Image (cartoon, rainbow, N blue to C red; front, side, top):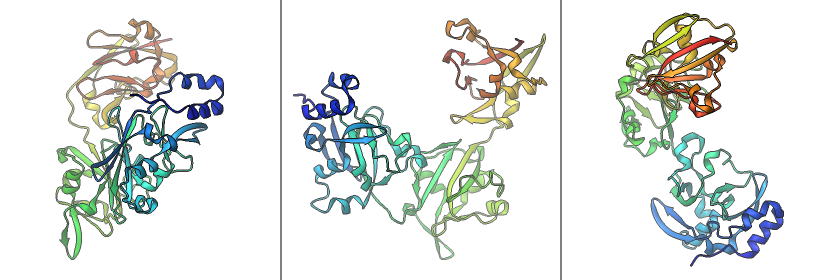
Length: 397
Protein backbone atom coordinates (compact mmCIF):
# COMPACT_ATOMS: atom_id res chain seq x y z
CA UNK A 1 0.00 0.00 0.00
CA UNK A 2 1.38 3.38 -1.00
CA UNK A 3 1.92 5.90 1.77
CA UNK A 4 1.36 9.63 1.48
CA UNK A 5 3.50 12.35 2.97
CA UNK A 6 2.01 13.29 6.35
CA UNK A 7 -0.31 16.26 6.36
CA UNK A 8 1.83 18.16 8.88
CA UNK A 9 4.77 18.04 6.46
CA UNK A 10 2.60 19.26 3.59
CA UNK A 11 1.18 22.02 5.79
CA UNK A 12 4.66 23.14 6.80
CA UNK A 13 5.77 23.28 3.17
CA UNK A 14 2.63 25.19 2.29
CA UNK A 15 3.11 27.75 5.08
CA UNK A 16 6.76 28.34 4.13
CA UNK A 17 6.19 28.46 0.37
CA UNK A 18 2.98 30.46 0.16
CA UNK A 19 -0.18 29.31 -1.60
CA UNK A 20 0.88 30.01 -5.17
CA UNK A 21 4.17 28.13 -4.98
CA UNK A 22 2.77 25.23 -2.98
CA UNK A 23 -0.05 24.24 -5.33
CA UNK A 24 2.25 22.03 -7.41
CA UNK A 25 3.53 20.36 -4.26
CA UNK A 26 0.08 19.81 -2.81
CA UNK A 27 -1.10 18.16 -6.01
CA UNK A 28 1.31 15.26 -5.47
CA UNK A 29 1.39 14.17 -1.85
CA UNK A 30 3.29 10.94 -2.52
CA UNK A 31 6.66 12.40 -3.51
CA UNK A 32 9.37 9.77 -3.00
CA UNK A 33 7.78 8.62 0.24
CA UNK A 34 7.62 4.98 -0.92
CA UNK A 35 11.23 4.86 -2.16
CA UNK A 36 13.62 2.40 -0.51
CA UNK A 37 16.99 3.89 0.45
CA UNK A 38 19.96 1.53 0.89
CA UNK A 39 22.89 1.87 3.27
CA UNK A 40 25.95 0.12 1.83
CA UNK A 41 29.14 -0.42 3.83
CA UNK A 42 32.26 -1.66 2.04
CA UNK A 43 30.11 -2.82 -0.92
CA UNK A 44 27.71 -4.80 1.29
CA UNK A 45 24.09 -3.64 1.67
CA UNK A 46 23.35 -3.63 5.39
CA UNK A 47 19.86 -2.09 5.29
CA UNK A 48 17.13 -0.88 2.96
CA UNK A 49 14.82 1.69 4.51
CA UNK A 50 11.55 3.02 3.11
CA UNK A 51 11.60 6.79 3.43
CA UNK A 52 7.97 6.74 4.60
CA UNK A 53 9.12 4.97 7.76
CA UNK A 54 11.23 8.02 8.60
CA UNK A 55 8.40 10.56 8.78
CA UNK A 56 9.45 11.76 12.23
CA UNK A 57 12.86 12.72 10.86
CA UNK A 58 11.57 15.07 8.14
CA UNK A 59 12.90 18.60 8.63
CA UNK A 60 12.44 21.86 6.79
CA UNK A 61 15.91 23.04 5.80
CA UNK A 62 16.75 26.50 4.52
CA UNK A 63 19.17 25.62 1.72
CA UNK A 64 19.94 26.99 -1.74
CA UNK A 65 17.73 30.00 -1.04
CA UNK A 66 14.55 28.09 -0.24
CA UNK A 67 12.92 25.88 2.38
CA UNK A 68 13.21 22.20 1.48
CA UNK A 69 11.70 19.17 3.26
CA UNK A 70 14.45 16.66 3.86
CA UNK A 71 15.51 13.61 5.83
CA UNK A 72 19.13 13.73 7.08
CA UNK A 73 21.16 10.90 5.57
CA UNK A 74 22.77 10.40 8.99
CA UNK A 75 19.36 9.45 10.40
CA UNK A 76 18.94 6.81 7.70
CA UNK A 77 22.36 5.44 8.65
CA UNK A 78 21.31 5.48 12.32
CA UNK A 79 18.11 3.63 11.46
CA UNK A 80 20.14 0.95 9.67
CA UNK A 81 21.84 0.19 13.05
CA UNK A 82 25.10 -0.33 11.19
CA UNK A 83 26.97 1.44 14.00
CA UNK A 84 26.02 -1.39 16.35
CA UNK A 85 25.21 0.90 19.25
CA UNK A 86 28.46 2.86 19.01
CA UNK A 87 28.34 6.64 19.09
CA UNK A 88 27.12 7.69 15.63
CA UNK A 89 29.59 10.56 15.25
CA UNK A 90 32.54 8.34 16.16
CA UNK A 91 31.31 5.74 13.67
CA UNK A 92 30.75 8.22 10.84
CA UNK A 93 34.21 9.73 11.33
CA UNK A 94 35.74 6.39 10.35
CA UNK A 95 34.20 6.44 6.85
CA UNK A 96 34.02 8.44 3.64
CA UNK A 97 30.73 8.53 1.73
CA UNK A 98 29.54 8.36 -1.85
CA UNK A 99 25.99 8.33 -3.27
CA UNK A 100 24.22 6.73 -6.22
CA UNK A 101 21.28 7.75 -8.40
CA UNK A 102 18.53 5.24 -9.14
CA UNK A 103 17.97 7.02 -12.47
CA UNK A 104 21.26 6.31 -14.21
CA UNK A 105 23.71 4.97 -11.61
CA UNK A 106 25.51 8.33 -11.40
CA UNK A 107 27.89 8.78 -8.46
CA UNK A 108 29.55 12.08 -7.46
CA UNK A 109 32.92 10.35 -7.18
CA UNK A 110 32.78 9.54 -10.91
CA UNK A 111 33.64 13.23 -11.45
CA UNK A 112 36.95 12.75 -9.67
CA UNK A 113 38.54 15.87 -8.23
CA UNK A 114 35.37 17.91 -8.72
CA UNK A 115 33.36 15.75 -6.30
CA UNK A 116 35.63 13.41 -4.28
CA UNK A 117 34.19 11.34 -1.46
CA UNK A 118 34.09 13.24 1.83
CA UNK A 119 33.83 12.31 5.50
CA UNK A 120 30.55 10.61 6.38
CA UNK A 121 30.23 13.14 9.20
CA UNK A 122 28.76 15.39 6.50
CA UNK A 123 25.75 13.06 6.25
CA UNK A 124 24.44 15.06 9.23
CA UNK A 125 24.18 18.02 6.85
CA UNK A 126 23.06 16.03 3.81
CA UNK A 127 19.36 15.52 3.09
CA UNK A 128 17.02 13.68 0.75
CA UNK A 129 14.25 15.97 -0.47
CA UNK A 130 11.08 13.95 0.20
CA UNK A 131 9.27 15.63 -2.68
CA UNK A 132 11.85 15.27 -5.46
CA UNK A 133 14.31 12.63 -4.24
CA UNK A 134 17.19 15.02 -4.82
CA UNK A 135 20.20 15.08 -2.52
CA UNK A 136 20.94 18.53 -1.06
CA UNK A 137 23.12 20.01 1.66
CA UNK A 138 23.40 22.74 4.24
CA UNK A 139 24.87 25.85 2.63
CA UNK A 140 28.02 25.76 4.77
CA UNK A 141 29.25 22.35 3.61
CA UNK A 142 32.07 21.88 1.05
CA UNK A 143 29.70 20.00 -1.28
CA UNK A 144 29.00 23.02 -3.49
CA UNK A 145 29.74 21.55 -6.93
CA UNK A 146 26.68 20.49 -8.90
CA UNK A 147 27.87 16.90 -9.23
CA UNK A 148 27.22 16.38 -5.51
CA UNK A 149 23.50 17.06 -5.96
CA UNK A 150 22.34 13.60 -7.01
CA UNK A 151 18.89 13.32 -8.59
CA UNK A 152 16.85 10.27 -7.56
CA UNK A 153 19.35 9.29 -4.87
CA UNK A 154 18.67 5.81 -3.52
CA UNK A 155 21.91 4.69 -1.94
CA UNK A 156 24.69 5.90 0.36
CA UNK A 157 27.95 3.97 0.12
CA UNK A 158 30.40 4.04 3.01
CA UNK A 159 34.07 3.15 2.71
CA UNK A 160 36.58 2.87 5.52
CA UNK A 161 38.58 6.10 5.53
CA UNK A 162 42.32 5.71 5.08
CA UNK A 163 43.82 8.62 6.96
CA UNK A 164 47.16 8.05 5.24
CA UNK A 165 45.72 7.68 1.73
CA UNK A 166 47.93 8.88 -1.08
CA UNK A 167 45.53 9.87 -3.84
CA UNK A 168 46.50 10.00 -7.49
CA UNK A 169 44.23 11.59 -10.11
CA UNK A 170 44.36 10.44 -13.72
CA UNK A 171 43.11 12.35 -16.77
CA UNK A 172 42.61 10.93 -20.26
CA UNK A 173 42.24 13.47 -23.08
CA UNK A 174 41.33 16.15 -20.56
CA UNK A 175 38.62 14.14 -18.81
CA UNK A 176 38.94 12.72 -15.30
CA UNK A 177 39.07 8.92 -15.26
CA UNK A 178 36.71 7.46 -12.67
CA UNK A 179 37.71 7.66 -9.04
CA UNK A 180 41.03 8.72 -7.65
CA UNK A 181 43.53 5.91 -7.00
CA UNK A 182 44.97 5.40 -3.51
CA UNK A 183 48.48 4.27 -4.42
CA UNK A 184 49.04 3.18 -0.81
CA UNK A 185 46.72 0.22 -1.47
CA UNK A 186 48.65 -1.08 -4.51
CA UNK A 187 51.30 -3.78 -4.57
CA UNK A 188 54.51 -2.33 -3.18
CA UNK A 189 58.13 -2.92 -4.06
CA UNK A 190 61.36 -2.00 -2.31
CA UNK A 191 63.58 0.40 -4.28
CA UNK A 192 66.82 1.23 -2.47
CA UNK A 193 65.13 0.80 0.90
CA UNK A 194 62.06 2.89 0.01
CA UNK A 195 58.55 1.65 -0.79
CA UNK A 196 57.25 2.33 -4.29
CA UNK A 197 54.50 1.24 -6.69
CA UNK A 198 54.73 0.63 -10.42
CA UNK A 199 53.12 3.12 -12.78
CA UNK A 200 51.49 0.32 -14.75
CA UNK A 201 49.76 -0.85 -11.53
CA UNK A 202 48.33 2.65 -11.09
CA UNK A 203 46.84 2.43 -14.59
CA UNK A 204 45.46 -1.03 -13.87
CA UNK A 205 43.79 0.22 -10.67
CA UNK A 206 42.11 2.97 -12.68
CA UNK A 207 41.08 0.44 -15.37
CA UNK A 208 42.99 2.33 -18.07
CA UNK A 209 44.06 0.20 -21.03
CA UNK A 210 45.60 2.30 -23.78
CA UNK A 211 48.52 2.11 -26.18
CA UNK A 212 50.95 4.31 -24.28
CA UNK A 213 53.04 5.11 -27.34
CA UNK A 214 50.04 6.98 -28.76
CA UNK A 215 49.85 9.38 -25.77
CA UNK A 216 51.89 12.17 -24.24
CA UNK A 217 52.02 12.74 -20.47
CA UNK A 218 52.31 15.78 -18.24
CA UNK A 219 52.21 16.15 -14.46
CA UNK A 220 50.62 18.36 -11.82
CA UNK A 221 52.01 18.69 -8.31
CA UNK A 222 49.98 18.71 -5.12
CA UNK A 223 48.41 22.11 -4.47
CA UNK A 224 49.18 23.42 -7.97
CA UNK A 225 46.47 24.70 -10.29
CA UNK A 226 48.49 24.21 -13.47
CA UNK A 227 50.51 21.34 -14.85
CA UNK A 228 54.28 21.51 -14.85
CA UNK A 229 54.12 21.94 -18.63
CA UNK A 230 51.81 24.94 -18.27
CA UNK A 231 54.18 26.41 -15.70
CA UNK A 232 57.11 25.99 -18.10
CA UNK A 233 58.88 23.52 -15.80
CA UNK A 234 58.69 20.41 -17.95
CA UNK A 235 57.78 19.53 -21.54
CA UNK A 236 55.21 16.90 -22.36
CA UNK A 237 56.83 13.50 -22.77
CA UNK A 238 55.72 10.31 -24.49
CA UNK A 239 53.77 8.18 -22.01
CA UNK A 240 55.70 5.22 -23.38
CA UNK A 241 58.64 6.40 -21.26
CA UNK A 242 56.59 5.61 -18.14
CA UNK A 243 56.14 1.91 -18.95
CA UNK A 244 58.74 0.93 -16.34
CA UNK A 245 58.44 3.94 -14.06
CA UNK A 246 57.59 3.72 -10.37
CA UNK A 247 56.31 6.17 -7.76
CA UNK A 248 57.70 6.44 -4.23
CA UNK A 249 55.06 6.39 -1.50
CA UNK A 250 56.73 8.76 0.94
CA UNK A 251 56.88 11.82 -1.32
CA UNK A 252 55.01 10.69 -4.47
CA UNK A 253 58.20 11.16 -6.50
CA UNK A 254 58.24 9.74 -10.01
CA UNK A 255 61.38 7.76 -10.84
CA UNK A 256 62.32 7.03 -14.45
CA UNK A 257 65.49 8.08 -16.23
CA UNK A 258 63.64 9.17 -19.37
CA UNK A 259 61.48 11.51 -17.29
CA UNK A 260 64.08 12.97 -14.96
CA UNK A 261 66.37 13.74 -17.90
CA UNK A 262 63.65 16.02 -19.28
CA UNK A 263 61.93 17.32 -16.15
CA UNK A 264 64.44 16.83 -13.38
CA UNK A 265 63.17 15.42 -10.07
CA UNK A 266 59.37 15.32 -9.86
CA UNK A 267 57.89 15.06 -6.36
CA UNK A 268 54.44 15.36 -4.79
CA UNK A 269 52.65 14.30 -7.96
CA UNK A 270 48.90 14.76 -7.54
CA UNK A 271 47.72 14.18 -11.11
CA UNK A 272 48.96 12.78 -14.41
CA UNK A 273 47.42 13.85 -17.71
CA UNK A 274 47.51 11.49 -20.69
CA UNK A 275 46.66 13.11 -24.03
CA UNK A 276 46.36 11.31 -27.33
CA UNK A 277 48.97 12.33 -29.88
CA UNK A 278 47.37 14.35 -32.64
CA UNK A 279 49.31 13.13 -35.64
CA UNK A 280 47.60 9.97 -36.86
CA UNK A 281 44.22 10.94 -38.33
CA UNK A 282 42.68 9.76 -41.58
CA UNK A 283 42.44 12.21 -44.47
CA UNK A 284 39.27 14.30 -44.69
CA UNK A 285 38.84 17.18 -47.14
CA UNK A 286 36.81 20.29 -46.32
CA UNK A 287 36.20 22.61 -49.25
CA UNK A 288 36.09 26.35 -48.55
CA UNK A 289 34.49 28.80 -50.97
CA UNK A 290 35.49 32.46 -50.67
CA UNK A 291 35.33 35.32 -53.20
CA UNK A 292 34.59 32.93 -56.06
CA UNK A 293 37.53 30.66 -55.29
CA UNK A 294 37.59 27.19 -53.72
CA UNK A 295 40.23 25.78 -51.40
CA UNK A 296 40.53 22.10 -50.40
CA UNK A 297 41.97 21.59 -46.91
CA UNK A 298 42.82 18.15 -45.51
CA UNK A 299 42.11 18.62 -41.82
CA UNK A 300 44.23 15.57 -40.94
CA UNK A 301 47.26 17.76 -41.71
CA UNK A 302 46.19 20.19 -38.97
CA UNK A 303 46.45 17.64 -36.17
CA UNK A 304 49.03 19.65 -34.26
CA UNK A 305 46.48 22.47 -33.89
CA UNK A 306 43.81 20.15 -32.52
CA UNK A 307 42.18 20.58 -29.14
CA UNK A 308 39.96 18.20 -27.20
CA UNK A 309 36.25 19.01 -27.10
CA UNK A 310 34.48 16.62 -24.73
CA UNK A 311 37.54 14.34 -25.03
CA UNK A 312 37.26 14.27 -28.86
CA UNK A 313 40.20 15.67 -30.89
CA UNK A 314 38.83 18.58 -32.90
CA UNK A 315 39.90 21.50 -35.10
CA UNK A 316 38.57 25.04 -34.79
CA UNK A 317 36.94 26.13 -38.05
CA UNK A 318 38.84 29.42 -38.08
CA UNK A 319 42.09 27.40 -38.14
CA UNK A 320 40.84 25.59 -41.25
CA UNK A 321 39.93 28.88 -42.94
CA UNK A 322 43.33 30.37 -42.12
CA UNK A 323 45.04 27.22 -43.43
CA UNK A 324 43.48 28.15 -46.79
CA UNK A 325 45.30 31.50 -46.62
CA UNK A 326 42.06 33.37 -45.94
CA UNK A 327 42.34 36.24 -43.47
CA UNK A 328 38.98 37.52 -42.22
CA UNK A 329 40.04 40.68 -40.40
CA UNK A 330 36.45 41.29 -39.29
CA UNK A 331 34.63 37.94 -39.49
CA UNK A 332 31.37 39.55 -38.38
CA UNK A 333 31.23 41.23 -41.80
CA UNK A 334 30.73 37.80 -43.40
CA UNK A 335 28.14 35.02 -43.25
CA UNK A 336 29.09 31.34 -43.17
CA UNK A 337 27.06 28.48 -44.58
CA UNK A 338 27.90 24.81 -44.01
CA UNK A 339 27.20 21.53 -45.77
CA UNK A 340 27.67 17.85 -44.92
CA UNK A 341 28.73 15.05 -47.23
CA UNK A 342 25.10 13.94 -47.44
CA UNK A 343 24.02 17.37 -48.69
CA UNK A 344 22.60 18.48 -45.35
CA UNK A 345 22.65 22.26 -44.83
CA UNK A 346 21.40 23.93 -41.62
CA UNK A 347 19.59 26.69 -43.53
CA UNK A 348 17.27 24.07 -45.06
CA UNK A 349 15.71 23.60 -41.61
CA UNK A 350 13.13 26.10 -40.37
CA UNK A 351 14.83 26.45 -36.99
CA UNK A 352 18.20 27.11 -38.66
CA UNK A 353 17.13 29.12 -41.69
CA UNK A 354 19.24 32.10 -40.59
CA UNK A 355 22.78 31.99 -41.97
CA UNK A 356 25.00 33.03 -39.07
CA UNK A 357 27.97 35.36 -38.77
CA UNK A 358 31.41 33.96 -39.55
CA UNK A 359 32.41 35.26 -36.12
CA UNK A 360 31.28 31.86 -34.88
CA UNK A 361 34.21 30.24 -36.70
CA UNK A 362 36.18 30.93 -33.53
CA UNK A 363 33.81 28.91 -31.35
CA UNK A 364 32.91 26.10 -33.75
CA UNK A 365 34.87 22.86 -34.05
CA UNK A 366 34.89 19.81 -36.32
CA UNK A 367 36.01 16.46 -34.96
CA UNK A 368 38.97 14.61 -36.43
CA UNK A 369 37.23 11.28 -35.80
CA UNK A 370 35.09 9.32 -38.27
CA UNK A 371 31.90 11.41 -37.95
CA UNK A 372 33.75 14.70 -38.63
CA UNK A 373 30.91 16.36 -36.77
CA UNK A 374 30.78 20.14 -36.62
CA UNK A 375 29.72 21.43 -33.20
CA UNK A 376 28.91 25.09 -32.67
CA UNK A 377 29.14 26.49 -29.13
CA UNK A 378 25.90 28.12 -27.90
CA UNK A 379 24.24 27.51 -31.27
CA UNK A 380 20.68 28.90 -31.49
CA UNK A 381 19.52 25.37 -32.34
CA UNK A 382 21.07 21.90 -32.56
CA UNK A 383 20.30 21.72 -36.29
CA UNK A 384 23.30 24.03 -36.85
CA UNK A 385 25.55 21.07 -35.96
CA UNK A 386 26.58 19.20 -39.13
CA UNK A 387 27.88 15.63 -39.35
CA UNK A 388 30.53 14.75 -41.98
CA UNK A 389 31.21 18.43 -42.61
CA UNK A 390 32.51 18.84 -46.17
CA UNK A 391 31.94 22.49 -47.22
CA UNK A 392 32.17 25.97 -45.76
CA UNK A 393 30.91 28.91 -47.83
CA UNK A 394 31.98 32.43 -46.82
CA UNK A 395 29.79 35.25 -48.13
CA UNK A 396 29.78 39.02 -47.54
CA UNK A 397 26.80 40.33 -45.61
